[in-house]
Amino acid sequence: MAAAKEETVNYFTKQYRAMLEENMDDYIGKFSEYMQPPEA
Image (tube, rainbow, N blue to C red; front, side):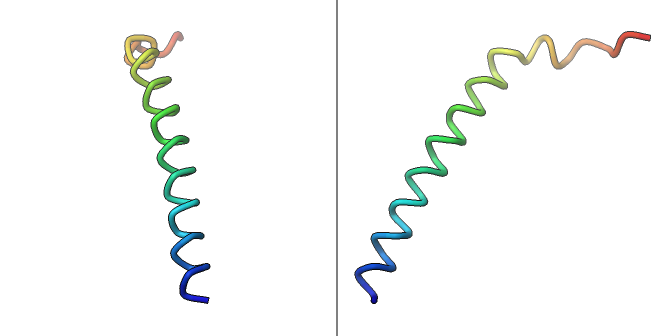
């Protein structure tokens, strides 16, 4: 069970990191768009 726990944590950590990096890249790429005032 302990080995499975470590493997599971490593898997989800890797998946979360990939998702976070993708989301950060998207945010960085669209930052100027996000910082525009809303249209009235």
